[in-house]
Length: 321
Image (tube, rainbow, N blue to C red; front, side):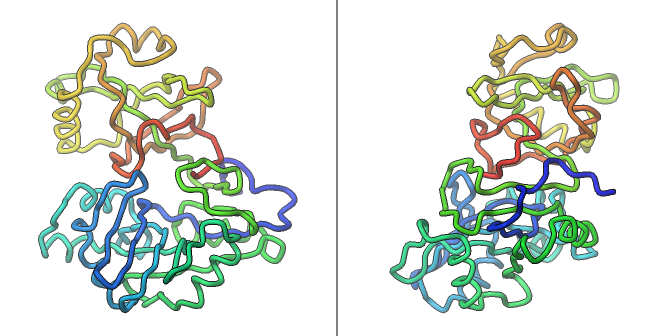
């Protein structure tokens, strides 16, 4: 039986589904003057992915388009790997050798504007139909994956396809939903095969002899629905020696005396942790949530630069916006 976090809306009538890719959201603004790429929190990342920019320029042929999609780094099997993408996410001008070593593709899943039309208020089904008509999929750098009606194809069947393709799961979207930038909308719901979440780093605990100069683990937190920053426990596995050094150097620049949490952390954390400003977001894989709201068996997957800290909620929430 597939392990899933959350269930698709029931009954499924009026809902569509698409695959969930393990990458970083990116908006592509295409014009006759050039292509620009922007992260989910509107940080320009054009220079980080020149091969994607070149592919979009060739495909769009000077037409004005606003696209929403996901930057992914396929591994040797063709499955998107967030850890591989990490090697490109923080490089503003990658060397040709790095571009050759770590391929990055752009998965387009929404059309927000074309020529002089703004499509934010158009239904999702309409936007997807117009996206398909543009034939942007070049079979290489830029791809437009299909979308399915949940009245015709079951969510369980799509989850099996996602599992076979080493994808994260599926995203269910209301066919009549408009595009709501920057808002967590109940009209978009994710169903994941692996339990993953974003979390905010709020502190760290000392390490043992092997990592005495870096840290033993990171203290994590998320925002409750009313905006309170609450502790999710800590993560001490999944790091490389290099990532430990880089994270420690970054955390040293944002140290603070007192905890940034709105609620007291667990006693074991409070006794040993040193604290930082809640400005860094990490990607975490975990088994489940304990009865007291802490992550069980978490593992670090990478730093996220495409998610602002104030958008990081509590794990298990179904919204993807």
